Length: 241
Ligand code: TMP
View 1 (cartoon, rainbow, N blue to C red):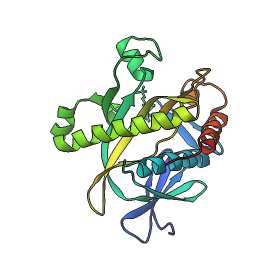
View 2: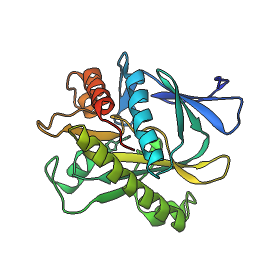
View 3: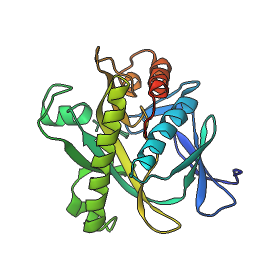
View 4: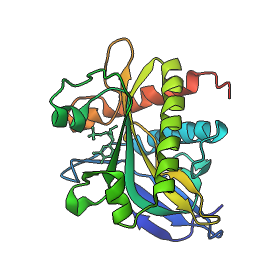
């Protein structure tokens, strides 16, 4: 399917319309941004790696009963997706406590808690994407209570599946950020956007080495090499389903 007009330009990706009004093409750029767009850099080759990783992960979720917007990879840095109406919420599932939550709760980075934590964030740059709760999301008219229940259930299922998949690649899924949208063709609530080292924390199981966007956030070296390693390790897993 051919790309038509650019309908959305984000920091890290572009979205194009196609001849089918219910289909779009996502194009991943070689840009990383962090800390609410304060930090920005170009990494040659990152778009291709993000596209490759996201395609593997979203396809894996689709095949295992968790619906996502992904349809197929259409080029090195492009993928065909179902068109969705964006819901400005982020669900973060945390298997360990790291990053902003470690700072917020005053626990060490990588703290192993006994439960799986599910956070909800309001995707709003002006407000610096605050943590909110279910009632706030409903009050803002963004979503209904039954939809929230569905969203949390799907996010947990996705986390369980991804955690098991990454484990087979010798990688620990520390946390994952998942976004949802309403499909333009039938309104169903599905996972949208990317799932990649930009939206997960991924640590090597043996050494604890970070293989994700924290390399950029924390000014560590080898950002692209780490993303490449994640892609290669995923490609080397024999996919059973
Ligand atoms: P946090 O610990 O900084 O809240 O991040 C939790 C997870 O969400 C982590 O894997 C990184 C991801 N994330 C995004 O995908 N986009 C963002 O804007 C932020 C702040 C985090």
